[in-house]
Image (cartoon, rainbow, N blue to C red; front, side, top):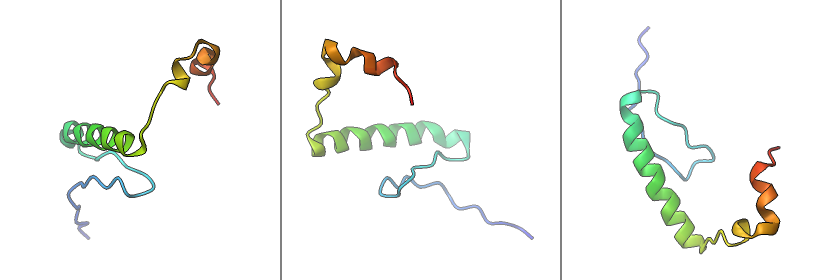
Length: 64
């Protein structure tokens, strides 16, 4: 039985954004992911000001 593989698509509206299985598609994936992240940050009016405050510096080394 032959399984038909579908071409990779970038679907950021999904709950999980999987990376493409084919390594040849990774550069396009990274580029689309970067564009999506920047657009999303602008849409949300994201600011990292709190993360840059000295009193919150510990958070960068605290992993759960």
